Amino acid sequence: MSGLITITASSVTPAAFELDTDAIRSQVADYASRQIAGIDDKAGAKSVKEARLELKKIRTGIEKKRTELKAGASARLLMV
Image (tube, rainbow, N blue to C red; front, top):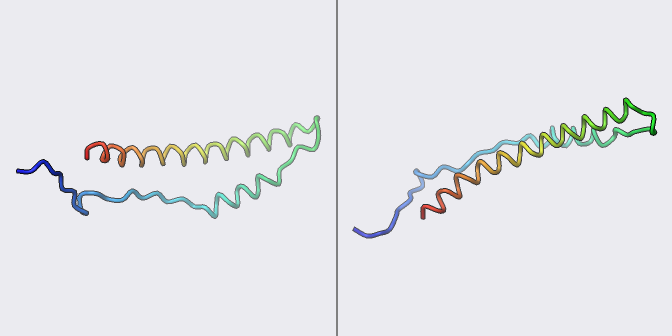
């Protein structure tokens, strides 16, 4: 018996990650148009802050999913 490990195509499934880029682009376009009119514009500041936090939530969610998918691939790579 040899010390080689055989990995067949059926034993490794590619990771799937669907992302609605059109929806993200439309959110970015909507959020980019928000502005703070001046130092006394509390509503504008609140709107901009909410938009920034929403985009941060999307960005960190994508990064978290990427890390999860990469962890499986890294584990298989270390086994080889």
